[in-house]
Image (tube, rainbow, N blue to C red; front, side):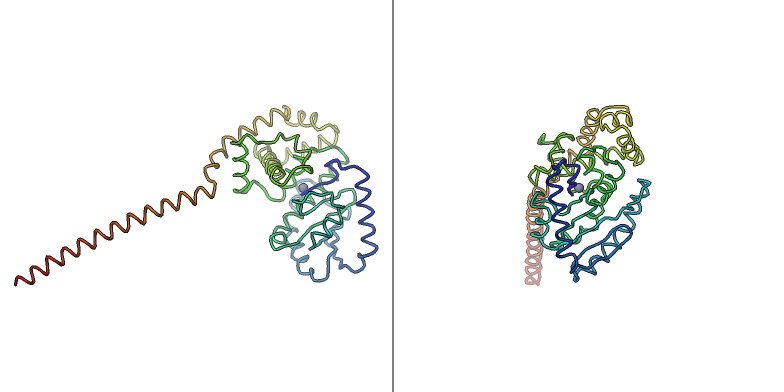
Length: 312
Ligand SMILES: [Zn+2]
């Protein structure tokens, strides 16, 4: 979810985390279980063994696919610390991470902290771990070059999830109609955003990367990263890769979401439930009316039969 290095968190904070993590390793590390899968070393509490096995099984193929795309493998060891406690998670990060965050990648410390506090978080954990590992891969790939947060988060979501889900498309459509779309470069202040705005920022980032990949192919994304690594200047590298500025891209992308998703505003679930209940009511009225009419008809025919019977 959050990549602390690229979010320009100051060095004192990073050093603080380093101290806490080191302290934690010395004091509690010994009581934790440890399991290695390629360059990843999982640290977890004993009862979570099955969970870890399942997690490893589920990330195996997607991770290899992404490494193939980057033509680079995660080979420098990365510690993956799993925790079930909100308090512990916040404690690790010195309460510096927003409340909406479920995981954090610390590329310089070669560490991922993943929270599995409830069933929903456990279900999403393979995808979230892949998201965090993409941050680490990007960090390694760029060798210190600056990557805007929208591109970093967008790639992490696009490579771990693919395109936007239906629900995310509706979030985007609503923001578009209400003119609340955030400029891509303003997403750099993601860590200061409240949950709803942060959610929109993530959805936008994923959509922009998905649009880029659809227009130019996944390999062009990798080419952009290579150019950023060589030129050490994001805007220059962007122009070099695509032949136009980020602003031109943003206009194209905005036009695309307007054309493609605006109509989804009509699909707000509550409104449909309301419309559907009205429709069901109308159907019920018509059915009752038809049934009564049939009954009346049958009754009057029976009356007539009675009358005829009576007459003989
Ligand atoms: Zn992230």
